[in-house]
Amino acid sequence: MRPSKRREILDAATRVVQREGVTTLTYESVAAEAGMTKGGLLYHFPSREELLLGLHRHVAQNWELALEAQAGGAAHELSRDERFRAFVRLSQNPERAELLLMLEASEDPVANAAWDEIFARWAPQPPEVPQPSDARDPHGAQDPQVPDDDAVQAAAVQRFIARLAADGLWFYEALSTERLDPRLRERVTEEIIALAQGAAVPAE
Image 1: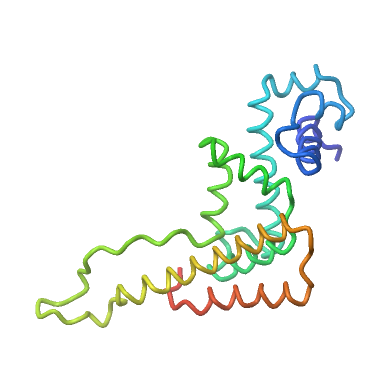
Image 2 (image 1 turned 60 degrees about the vertical axis):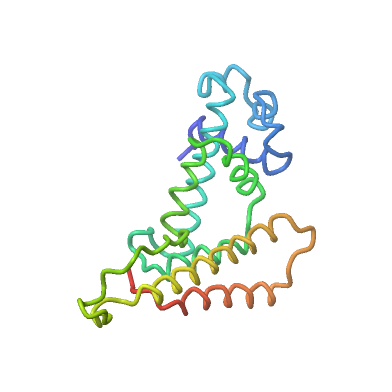
């Protein structure tokens, strides 16, 4: 099935950003890349802001499709560990356009939402600071049926540290001029996954 003109435009815009950066994204650069007229772009995206927002959503959607392909299913069909394993594995093959757009989105709440929704589904989020526990009986003893707050918090922090390590690997691979040796990359990836899986948080 032939891709739609809108998708062709967004794929062309992705290539422009991948090759030259977000600041070079103009009607002229995208039209030249797509082999279209500027008028053709204006029909689908009346302003550069709409083009850029459409690009954020397009690249973010493609990123989640890659996560699903890596994991073998949609986020809601997978366990927490399966989701995170796919998240870490995908960090081994970063795309420059993804990184540049994520950084650009940090200054635009609407564009940022396209990325945040995916992070929320696939990666550990910053743990909440625990409130005073209600898990003790009137005599001050811990209820054995309720997980200890400190243990839950420690495990959540450990999983978040693993997520930060995965982000760091992704940024390193995207920005470094030297590629990691595949054996080292695999070792680092497995260590990050093991760190998250070793966190004894009750299963979701």
